[in-house]
Image 1: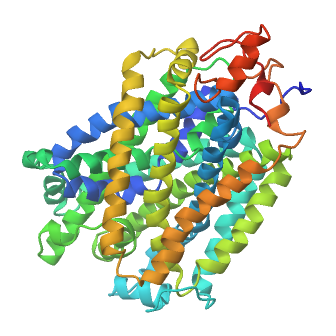
Image 2: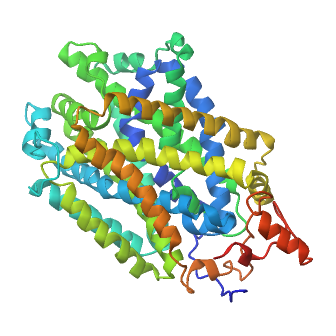
Length: 548
């Protein structure tokens, strides 16, 4: 039975510039600053740039194009876009949404830490022992992992402030909230980090740090793990495969230069990573020189780099207070722009499924998430919980969901030719069959290798020395649990007010689903027997053939 369709009330970006700023804001996150420099150092220094660039061109940007194509063609958040593409893929869309829920819960607390440390930099609150201050005095970290309700006020209040800022921005909508905040955050982030880099380059020992980072070890290129690290870094840093870029692309107007925008976002993200590497290792070079140690002994990544190594540098460096404000301020702005994009995936999905207005959907999503986040992470056990959840949602959430979606699009509904045609319809950089080979061949192989390697490693070694029960509940349990929840959400009926029953922003029908000769055998035979047209790629297919 045909459904009545109404014009879409879907919000849009005002133009390409607004979209690019928002997309860069999502891609440039904490990992760019505190992960890329150390990954480069560990995997051959300057030689790592070669596999990194190859990974960017053969997997990162092609996957970015894929997200853009699905979101823009099917005009929706992951559940709606995948359902419109092929009904059986709605579960994958909700899987991506649940990944964003988990990341959003803990991401805010890291931004809260960075906010506190921005102010701590002014008077060097950590004293002579940054590690002891961070784990002991600031986090009051428990020696036993678990779930505690022993709250730490110094962490709780900044966390609440972060949530309120993000909720306020998201409630304003796509253009007034996301686009305008990105137009402020990204230039500020770039300016602050450029000043930080320039200041770091003039520190004693800076050149030693840069030599350590960029001196190439070409022998590393024969090690498969280096290539896996390159693909992993590109994959995680570009915000591809878990709904963000797909959702943002759905807010673009119908005639947009998708591939041109994708190239700008991809290369901007990588440029910032290289810039971060220069700034971080110049500062580490100073730290090593001051301590009379080689750079290899002070090099660190993640939390260790941000909240232990850099406070040490700030305490010793001339004008260290400025370095501290710039570094931690950069973390705050990078974190906020990324967190906004993470929550937008969830909000857009609720809007699409239930037909809610922007403010109501924002509150329905964000307030419960804020409460859970405040209950779990600003506590004495918050860091250990964050550590396990982050590791498993990345390796067994993002990677697995991306792999399943790509395999389904290639081996299931054979959607790549149709999506390529959509990208080429209005883009300056036209794609050929190589794009399909990269997405359908190289990407699933690399993702599959990363996933299998991590599964074998975690099953044999556990994770981080944590007790098995803790890892099984908050690691494996969480990874499996979000898939189950995703499946259940896909079983819920779509509201008659939902995006599923809306036309495009110009009142025209949204692109029809892609039918597969095997998976949709009965539907196709029925249409053929009725004398109706059938399309397996781009032809006219009634939208209702793929509806419950």
